Image (cartoon, rainbow, N blue to C red; front, top):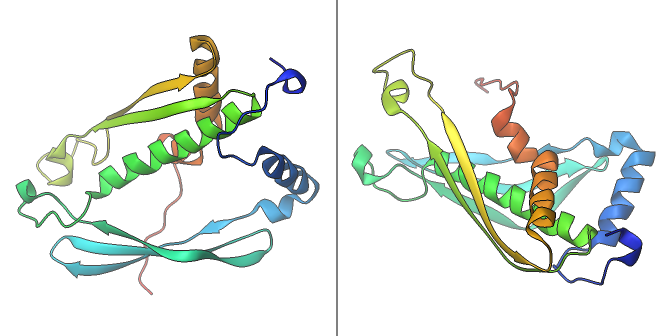
Length: 187
């Protein structure tokens, strides 16, 4: 199916605006440099609260319409109070959210109407590394599986191609599958 013969779909994605932004950033690549930010405050024990209010991009500073708070903690089985999702769970949610947004965008661009999209994400982790029991065990995930259940006006092969394109363009997929330079420092 080409874009010219694609039926009109409404997946809630303004694909014309995205195409316009893509062209604008092609013409002015320096504007494509973004900086995402979050601040985090310790609450008590292993409980923390991250707040997201602003970011920079398109050559200027932007504020979100509202601030967003993410509560993080560890479960009671870790002698914590379970006041929020565990940090690895937040990473899994970010991965699913990024891929799902991509699916909606790619489907809209390809003229595919979505009826429902549900991701189930699971990440395996051996805590012997985190707890210092075995220094040879990685602290992070040893594997992540994302399983999609998608109902759409398209064949299974077309839906698989949409998922693959979303994965290819996902910033969070890239973050969890490729090394990133991270500096941790004191103010």
